[in-house]
Length: 100
Image 1 (cartoon, helix red, strand yellow):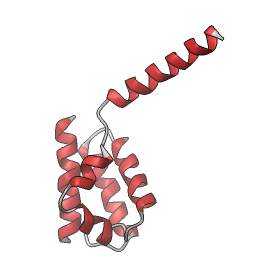
Image 2 (cartoon, rainbow, N blue to C red; image 1 turned 90 degrees about the vertical axis):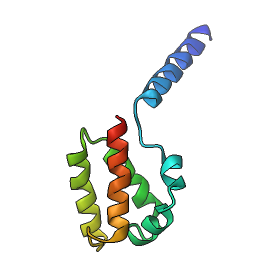
Image 3 (cartoon, rainbow, N blue to C red; image 1 turned 180 degrees about the vertical axis):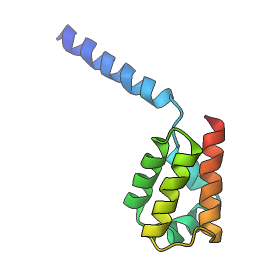
């Protein structure tokens, strides 16, 4: 039973280590004043699509990779990359990459 406790501690440490690396915080994103409009226009309030997009962007090594993902999202969702919401979302993602 002690071994089991030890293994659980190891797992918790791994989770904490992963969490400490820079990640896109959904709560921070959702607090952005433009996020409601972005969710409506870009993702049609599809939270699964939104979370999937954020996960993909978080895996990018740099902002250029993220921009390519954003372009695919806009294309598949029928959103003009020049729309106010797309520009706002690009800006939010750009800020994320400046922090890391």
